[in-house]
Length: 268
Image (tube, rainbow, N blue to C red; front, side, top):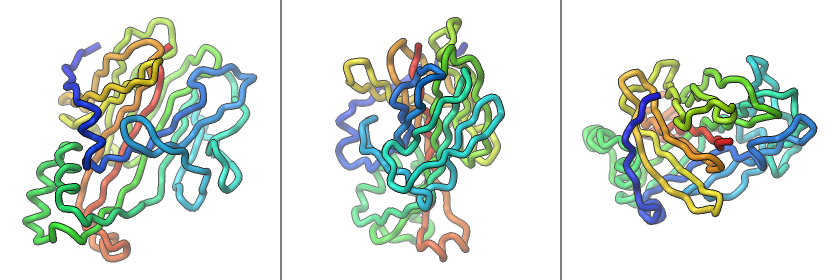
């Protein structure tokens, strides 16, 4: 396994104007038996802490459970919290996948946009914004979330796979099996292609609830290596920012689109 140097970032930085609200799937328990109910929240917030979103079919494009290539749509009742509550399938590695509909953010503060672009590592967007003659404030961004989580049922044997999301992490390791070596390798895809030299933000929550935030990057093959610790919970996050096509821009009143990939897991 490769080791890629990470950069530690003070948590307080992100609490002051960085405008980086992640959305992730958070199981009530990442390791369960086949007799237990599989429950998971959709959460939105900062610093790996946030509020729970209800089950809202009109706000989601996808909410699925995937095991060994079999895809099961997650069904619920409008307003349910947790958003996922279902009988556990057979033993193995369960992958929950969530895709939101597009939401819109209106920028009234130029510094907020600049901080976001710097934080999520696309300074070229600031140059493009100016080159397109866009205003410093009074414009809108559309954003869509693509989240996955890994849950061990029983021994948790199995593997993650590419589920065809527009932006997506694919875990190359299973952190629940006995011979896991303590480094989580992940592929990062955008529109079916691997993303080389892309920033990955790593949120590490310790058993006492404290969170450390670091960043790393994918290598030339689009693979990131994240050293991890037993009994810690992890959120990996990566964002693509792009100019929308003319039809989308006109229909939704946006000048930028952001696509957010997230992956959560713990380590046995």
